[in-house]
Structure formats: C-alpha cells, structure tokens
Image (cartoon, rainbow, N blue to C red; front, side, top):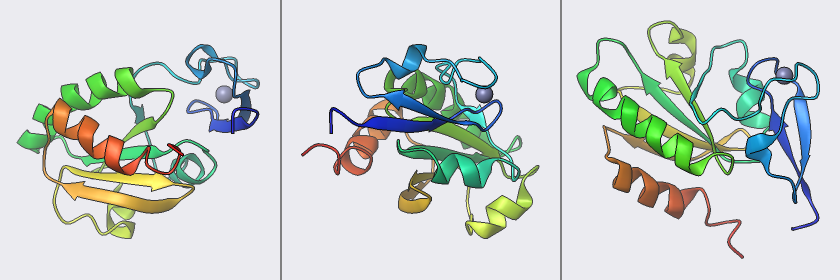
Length: 151
Ligand SMILES: [Zn+2]
C-alpha cells in the first residue's frame, strides 16, 4: 500500500495525475495545467466533469448536492468547507448545484437536499440526506470513507 501511487483528477483541467504515496498530495500541482490538485475547498462539479472526477480518483469522493434556495444547504456549506480543509487530500470534496445540474440530480435520484453521497471508483458507497454538523460529518466519513483502507 505504501509503495503505491494515487491517481488524482485535476479539478481544473481533468488530467489524471499520478501522485506517489510518499508525496504530500496537498502540495502537488497538476502536471498539465500546473494548478494545485487540492486547494482546501470543495470543487464545483458539473455534468461535464462529474463522471471523470468520481471514477478516475483513487481517493473517495464526497459530493454535496445542494441548491441556492435551500436553507439547510446554506447552513451546511461552511461546515462542508471546514471538513474539506481538514480531510483533503485523503478525500476529494465536491459540490453539485442541483438547480444548474438537474440531469445529475435526476441521475442520482436526489429527492431531498442537502444530500451527501460518497463515491469510491464511481460507485456510491454511502449516502445521507439532511444537514449535518462538523462532528457528524467527520464520524460519518470515518465510518464509510476510511474503513477499507484501514487494514
Ligand atoms: Zn490540471
């Protein structure tokens, strides 16, 4: 495991970067566009880059499906950002605006927002509807995002 490299998709240009396990991915820059692979902030995803971002990343990807008119979503936004800053680069944090990206919301059958969906290699491994606080989000991620890698 420690000898392996991780494939990290650049959120800016969608290039797949190979980051050696010993290297600090939070400081890594994209080999193609030279932008940082992690900025400590959630990535706004669209139908254009969503599939690649959830499938080609070796790290788990957490998606917050939200909308501008949704009060609980706005309440959760700073919490999501805070936990993103804490847990990158072990998890990629993304946001999907369900108003702008209705096809994605339909594809993933989003019935209420906010909905959090955790992906690993393109597959949904956990999901949760409703706002959560920072501690709740950390606990949920510890259960679902890190369980397989903690061998
Ligand atoms: Zn790039």
